[in-house]
Length: 280
Length: 122
Image (tube, rainbow over all chains, first blue to last red; front, side, top):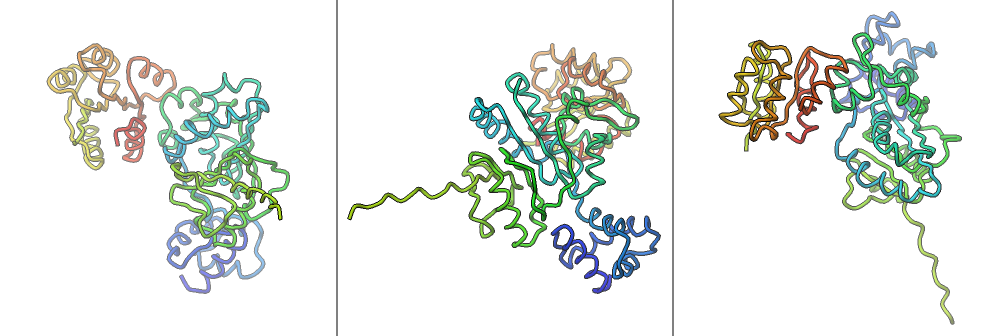
C-alpha cells in the first residue's frame, strides 16, 4: 500500500476513534478494509483511500472506522479477570452497598457484547442476594453496527462455545436458526449505547466497576491519559477499573492506583491526607 | 505430567481429528469406538479427560457416562460430550447424566481448548 493511502486511512481512523495504526499494521488495514471497499464499489483499498481524500459519504467513513475498531471477543474472556470480579470485587461491593442497594457497571468497549452479557450472567448467580437492588450494566462501543448486534443478542454456534460453560448456555440461551439468542431477561439487563471513548461521557453518572480491557493499548499516551482520568473521576472511591492483564497506568496517569495482587485492577488514587496544623 | 484423553467416537475421521487437536494441546490420547469399549478402557486405566460422542452402537454416550460415574474411580475424569445433538434439552440431559461440559459439532481446536480450560485442564 502506498504511503499516501496508508496516511489517509490511518488519519481518518485516528481522528474518529483515537486508535493509532503503526505502519506495521498495514496488513490489518488491507484485510479489514477490503470488504468495506467492495461494499462501496471500489476495486481496492487504495481506491477507497483515494475516494476518502475528497469529502466522502459519511457512511463510507463510518464503515472504515468501525471495521478498524472492532475487536474479537468471547464470553468470560480472560478467566482471571472474571475470577477477581466473582471472588473479590463483587462480594466487596455488594457488602459495601447493602444500604444503598445499587450497583452500576460500565463495559466501555463492549464489541459484540460478550463482556457485558458475561457480567450479567455472573450477577444472575447472585440474584437472590441482589433482589430489590438497582443493578445497571451500561455497555458502549464506537460501532453502531456492533451495538445493534449486541442488542439483538444472537451468537453463532462457534461464539457460544468459546468461554461459555455449557450450563450457562443451557440456562441463558435458546436456539435461533443456526445460532443462539440470549434470553430476554439478560438482554433487558444490559443497556447498550454507541459511544466514542474520546468524547465526554455526558450523563453517564458514577460507576462501581468500569471494564476497559485491551482497548487503550491502541491509543496514544495523551488520549489514554484523558480517558483514564475521566474514568477515575467516574469511579466510586471504592470502585474498580479493570484493564487488560498486560496494561498499566504507570507513566500515563496518577489518578489510578494498581491493586496489589489483583492483575489488571485499578482504583482511584485516594486524596492526600489533610496536613495537621502545627502549633508555632 | 502429560494428561490422557480417551476419545470415544464411532467415526474414525472424528477420532483422527480429535487426536490431532488434542496432541496440539499437549494431551496423550487413547481411542474407543463405542461406550462399552470405552468402559473397558477406563477399567484398565482411568483417563483424566473423556471426549464423548452421543450416538454410538452398543452403548451410547449417555449410557456410558451413567455407567462410568458408578465405576470405582469413574467420578474423576472430566467428561466432555462432543456431539451433533445441539439443543438445550440435550445439553441439560448430558449434564444431568454426569457430563461436565458439552461441545457441539462442528468444533475447532479453539473451542476444544476453551472447554478444557474451563475445567482447569490446560
